[in-house]
Length: 376
Image 1 (cartoon, one colour):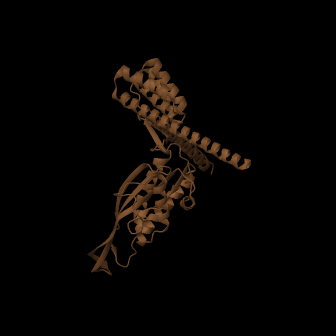
Image 2 (cartoon, rainbow, N blue to C red):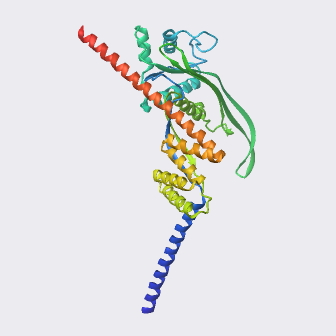
Image 3 (tube, rainbow, N blue to C red):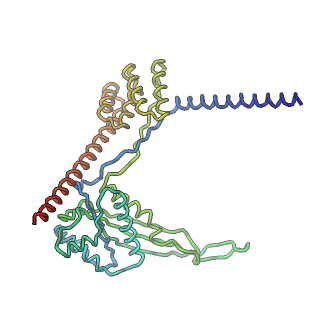
């Protein structure tokens, strides 16, 4: 019995020691991977809206026209009316449009409803319902929005193809009829200055989708479901044009190639900070290593991590110095990236400034109107 206990205890000690060796080996292996592989550092950054809406804060979505609804075609072959006249025609006639193809109506409604939801949920704009806009126009009041989005749906087709296919039923070969649904549609969207009718953007996209082959009794996917992913991409595109949006900016750090012990030590420390996601500390160690040793990889990594922290001026100075010293095309490409990021930031700052000025002017106008009413 005693010997049995000893064996069990020895086995536990052995397992514990073996487990520790595995853990130690795993740690060493991770260090080898860290030392041998370049790291990628990602940050989420804000991009400016693609269009300059001059600080607009109030927006509306006008019903999208479609080729089967009875509305004047305000988009093709006619001179665009000026500002309020154009907007009035579009809004008021939309309310009187007769319903056309049900599938096409559902497509229009999906785009309008989801674009409206995206605008409301973004918190960036004050959303103005198109009915309120129409009501203001009927009463001769100023349009209560600065920008509106509308468009039209054309070239809508739903086609079906049929074929005979062989199928095994109860271990017997039988011929069955299969069907495929094909949907195509052209969508145009327009982003317009509601005050003067000038067009910020006008773009048309063509979509075509098809189902797989299905037997007649199987349920076909609805038209909207078939085109939903295309419509969502279209809405995201519109949102990027009119408001700032977030993207993931990635930089790939360079692996150390130097055999110099001082460089290896500094680079290993910086790599460890990267692994811990201590980007600021890693950047400083890389830059220090570059300033002490002139190592290209250290300078490059330090500059790119500074860029990831939006320290563009310092990042650009280091990368410019690297490129001047080495002529390395990697530094030239990185320098162009940093310069682009600076332009993005300047454009974003300007958009924020314009919106703030617009807000201040609106508040001043409202206060002035309120004071006038009180005085009367």
